[in-house]
Length: 311
Ligand code: UDP
Ligand code: MG
Image (cartoon, rainbow, N blue to C red):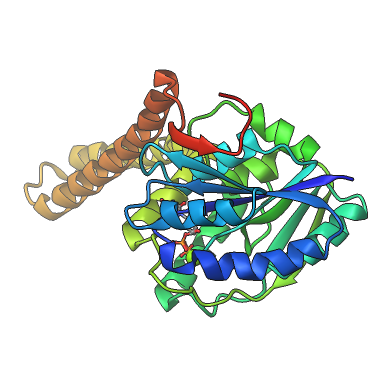
């Protein structure tokens, strides 16, 4: 019988743990598969770890990894994929925003032979207006400049066949923009739709600042366009200023020296200064990421694990 690994990242989700498992078991029981539930405690400061241990006492198919600190959701998912032993894995949020009932549809598609099944959120009703706007902008920019196709509304709720898991495990980068990595590897794709649910307890871990940084991670990981655009801007500005220079020279030769010019000088200087700082900033963004790649630090550190054979 094929096996399925459910991968759940937890960061301060103690109050919802019991509820989540209560919803998961009936769905998983009805699949006719053997399964394991891999819980990654991503440095929670509340009682999440205790609640997970309690679940494991009741059912040994629950396996737990406790990270040494909070390494972020992307690292937690990477860790889950590293230790998963199933013929397929499903990654999903642990706050019940991703309804477990959708697993049945995901597995049905997988059985039809699809390697990568996305659960696509059919709306963003649970997101704030600003977040919706930003996410739409992100997808538009990403689509325009990135080298890969990522379906809009696809999040981290998806089913990955063993082939896809092994492919992702081969990707060595530190910058884990999981959605992008999953899309990058290819294979046959399918989709199922679902309605995002309101969060059960707690609040989202993504504030505006973190979201923008995350969007930058995604863009810089899959596009060099922001780097290259400055070549074109530079060329354009050079051509314009060169023509203006010729015009000024000719005008001075014909009608003599003319002192006023403060406004045009200021505007030109400030504008160019701004453009230069912006392009330097972009260089810095990429350089920072190259720096973190060359350091080759591990993506995550495990402090405790139960249910896994190795170590
Ligand atoms: N999460 C995590 N580590 C983090 C932040 C979040 O493992 O540093 C988990 C969190 O427990 C949840 C999932 O990632 O299961 C999604 O997080 P959240 O609900 O805060 O994000 P949103 O649904 O608002 O995108
Ligand atoms: Mg959530």
